[in-house]
Length: 620
Image (cartoon, rainbow, N blue to C red; front, side):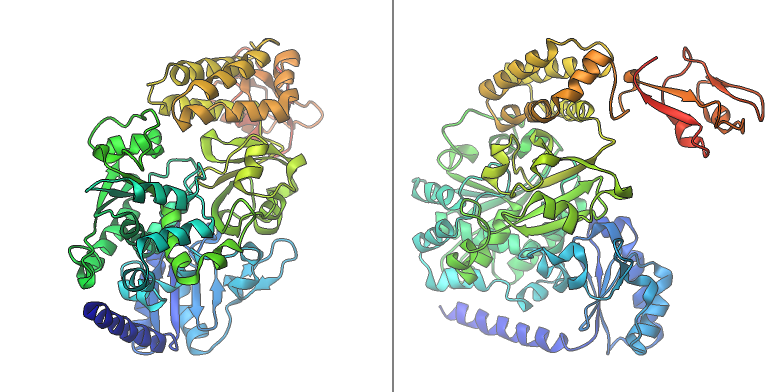
């Protein structure tokens, strides 16, 4: 225990030093992938140069961090200790920020967030509506940490949980704590984490493995990426605790190839943890050996399924396999393997430090803790949202998301990724947890949420997700391989003016067969987009089939365009823009559209500044 005592003293010195630093002004620049895409690094460099210009290097700190969640208004900077929140910052703003806010203590009005509902300028992050109803457990420390500095993580209490486990807790006690907390896997299936650990711990085997599933493949979802980019050490610490609990000596982080920044941060974190003797042989003199390797996935969506993921780690084709046996009994190379996703692992140190009772008080009876969602689509405020389980869809969309752009009507929200379901406006008061979402034909998934407005065609939505799943199916199961393809063919036919009344029942029957007979979760949940849209929006399917109309005016074969004679002034803009030369007419005279040439691309409708072109539901 001497090594642990020495390490505790070292951590204490680091925390003391960080506490002293916290009294100095600090400019915090949000710079995850979303921030970088909008110029956060350029803002950071511009601020550094101005700090140097004013010779403030010893008086003002500057920190480059991961994402703060409100991606809609990146690049974001926060000025500590006042916690002034500036949004949409540009490099040219750096001079004014340093001279006015840092030196003269003045607020820069045009950089403050403006509430779209009342026009009020908001100075502090906590007062911004997007953040008010959030309960940030995992994301709250992103602003306090430079992901490339282990000392920052230690400064906020990092690695105290693994020290507690190694010095005071037996593996059985750790597993019991995770069980009592009630945490369920955040990767989609929602299986109780403590039970999974217990099975892996009790399974005999000289060699066991721990895996972090960071193969986040859902379109529009980036929760795991944000944690890895902003607070990678929380994931490592969680994996260390899990490995010690089940008796594993080797771990893998399986991360998708499309996440280069996350790979860089987690790789740096592993190297720093080894330098601090937190990974490797005989960790802190306790006899505990544990190391972590990074495996980069090649982008196959099906590799997010745990058995396909294991095959990929083994160097095989990423195909699912039959269960049982489950990974906790026979996983990688037929050894007991415990797999959890990024968000689950990041929760583990919090549970160990604060206790199972603390965690279990958050959320609902069957779904404990907080959950991170990516809120995207037809919504005013897009970004990452961490909320307690049980919050309603209405609160998510209107209180946090700020409602629908242009005051349009909310139509549906799709949860759970491509295999999730579409939930209509009639269910806006639905609490968000595993069981409630399942009861209405959707799933939690990894946490993707896509908001749709009145201009969204639900038949087209089903077609989009079926197309994605058909392409991503590994093809191993006949029902998944052929069933999804047949369903897609039917839906495509409906959107192309060739639908038949019997297609509705065929889709329902085929969807149930694919669900019941497919081997893995991809196939078992693939019909959800169709079945849920049929359940809540069957009239929209019938309009496509019976009336040959697309009510949302999206499906090309089922819409038409007409130039209004009382409105058109003959400006010629639509004629010039039309790629098919389908519009004719003399200048300052009524123009017309040749129906045979028109491909219904909508360019004329978008080009006309006088609302002279009518977009109609229904073909000619």
